[in-house]
Image 1: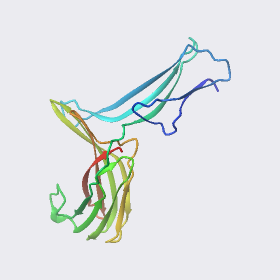
Image 2: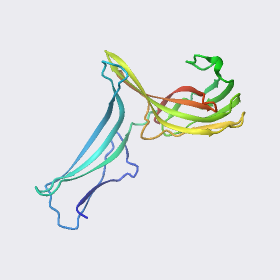
Image 3: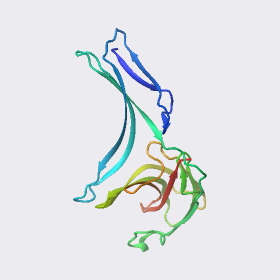
Image 4: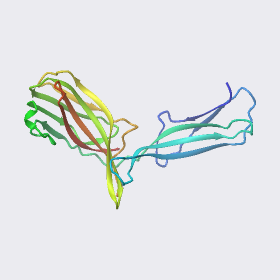
Length: 247
């Protein structure tokens, strides 16, 4: 084994807040005497962007992820290869003050309530009712509620929760919007008993969610879709906008 450089942060979860000190150690492992021309640390914050091809002639860049990295570089003599090591860490925004007011939502899904349906008469008859305990959510706490299939002419194949991140950016020339599925969990499989309350429980993925952000030219918002798949492959979707906070 040659010379190895490593970076270890003192916090095991690697989560920091604004104003806190990032501390740890740089570990050098070598079986032979080691010569170098200095060790430097650099901290980088990067935003990954992607281009959208949805509009022609308009440049649209969408936020994909924010990444914070601590990089250690060790310069070595001319004939030796420089060594480097990167350590990614997470920066959380400061918790908001006050208490969050719950905003429960009761919903009912029937063929008549669905949007963007051309031939409503071809749909099987069904009634699905449910409740989200709150669409104002704390990012460190799960989204909860329940769902009940009261009746359906066609057996249910699957019920899923789909979490979507919606990014909007733009300027005077116009705004562009892009939605990305960041999590999909199945809460029921197969033809469930009608009238049975199915719990809704979704933990927000730490690396893909953040508090809802709204600025003049840039927004990061979140939505959850309740997706019911019937045995005849009819897909029923109900959308609920979410507001995510950190307390």
